[in-house]
Amino acid sequence: MNRPTIFLRDRATSLADAWGPLPVVRKASAAKHAKNLIVVCAASELHNVADVVHLANHDKKLRALLVRNDVEEGWMTTCFSEAGIRGLRNVLVHGAGSGTARRLLFAWRTGTPDRLIESVALRDGWFYVRDCTLEVLKFPISAVPELAAMAPEHRARFTVDACGSFVEWEHADLQLGLTQLRSLLDPAKREAGRAARRAWDANFGEAVATVRREDGLRQTDYPGLSDRQVRRIEGGAPPGVDALRALADAHGGDVNAYVRRLSEHIHRRLVPRP
Image 1 (cartoon, rainbow, N blue to C red):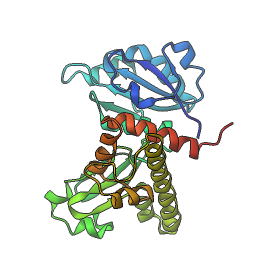
Image 2: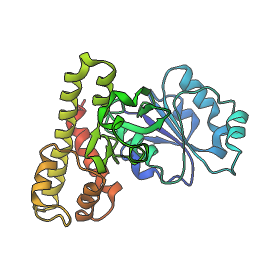
Image 3: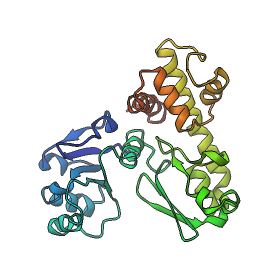
Image 4: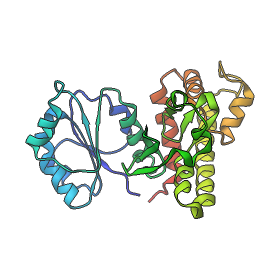
């Protein structure tokens, strides 16, 4: 999957570190020639990107429109209306420092938007999962026995991994990745999904080990994690949110910078060089 170009029209964006090596253009003339496009703009700039958005959407090149909410409460709809932008599936409105926007950009920079989770919602007995192409997966909560057995207040206590690899109910020791969730709707894909998840986890673990070796650290050099936990993560066991923070702390303390390094190693492994 070709990595997209970022068309940037948001001077106050906090996402610059999230798209990493993806090419960035600031002129509409350059954006119109991109083969795949992610538009990053403020709500107040929607009228300035509308032509590019319409053209890219018509040509099936628009991968996402990420809109930072910088307007007063109740005025977002007006911004979209005045820009003439309606009915797009792949729109994500976010606040400053949004984890969902960061997950989407991480997925595209690693070439894995259809494998990673952007966001999750639980409503009226249904489980909604949106991947980083902004496609929505919907299935009954009863399809996951562990979820069905939880009290509603416990079921609502979930977190999405910083990279989008899984949604986790830490109190119940339950993690669900996108391939696992898709297999609930198509049992024939179950084994293929498990294999894809194992491959992703193995690549993630190898990236953790590579970054550790680059920084001259041992598996015992991570405060808050035992060497056994580090070995398991490097061997393909996905880390939870707290474990990811502990890993990042040992490499300078910036989770976003640490994830960016991991993503660069994963990208080199998953995307063949031309």
